[in-house]
Image (spheres, rainbow, N blue to C red):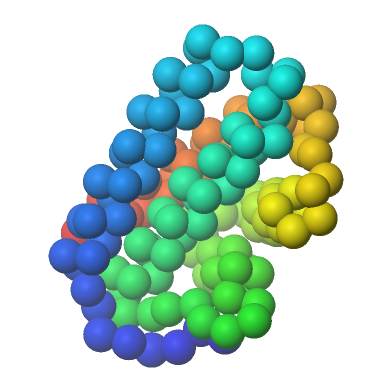
Length: 136
């Protein structure tokens, strides 16, 4: 459920700093380790970056995803922005489901999934960052 709250740009700025740390980490990791062996952890990190950026977008506008389906609602809410296509929202929900299965059921995210989707995920991250920047 998406609820109305007071916009909190200071919290958004704080989240951005954490997101930047995650990006630095993932960038250094991708260049120094066997990405095939750690594809699940890398995909989960991309998901966390995207989730936090999407949360920052909503928070900057005075909204918050809450409740049992908060992450699904968060990803679905991105369809309200012209920057994101239906295919991108579907991809984000697919990544959310894969991340949940890895986190809660111990299922690995296949390296081919990451290889095939990485560029699209990086484009989504770039779009989210631009959207957040426009709100601050």
